[in-house]
Image (cartoon, rainbow, N blue to C red; front, side, top):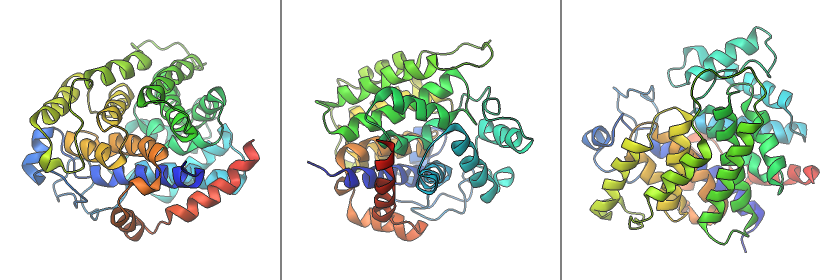
Length: 348
């Protein structure tokens, strides 16, 4: 039986793993392969990277991991979590990384930052945000409760300051609930974890209390189940992409074409869960699938890696890759997990 400490540190390391492996991705699977070949490990993004990652070192994290760590550290510091704590943590972090001049922050996050700076309350600052910024950072909040409804509430609070739409709230709820289910260690299969995510997506969308949305809102729960179903006939790939059979590459293209790999939450989140299922819950395999997919591969990989890391624990991630992530980014996953674990006890 894995310890909760291993699951927390695995979640944090898995999130960073998927983020860092995915930084070189190009807009399409074919463009990614043309530029880098098959991605099998950490690669420094090329100078012409279209997503603003040029200049990052191999193994360096981006805003996906930074945002999640900002929330984790706020929970540790405050020994509590609320909408206002989330909003202040995100505002402080965004100011610290100079969001306005950074090329790789999404439009919803930048717009929300400007609103928060103007004094707009966090219940309103994120109205209209439907990209994947809430989903990418929420995973560690899944450890704050074993009650799915409570986890959904925390996820909604974390999303509202920047992504307060039915889709934004649903996406955060899905990822947090998947981590909660995976971390419990009681899931009989990956189907249980994914179904928990789908059900939480529905709860998250229903919690939206803003003005009526006049643009179509896809049903995220149905899209998660549908994307996962696409992978059922595909063979499970191993950890070496050079040995993946052709059906795996065809499936990546299928997911790219049908589910999508863009910044919209209704693309990112279903695709991440499809890769989780395709990888059989292995964090490295899921992260490598995302890296070779193309599109917003760092965010898709971060979500998939975090959920898989929560289920399999830190031991499932190669030690040399953990060491690289810690060295390049100045992190200590085990210590941060211990600090978080010590804090979680106050949540009951």
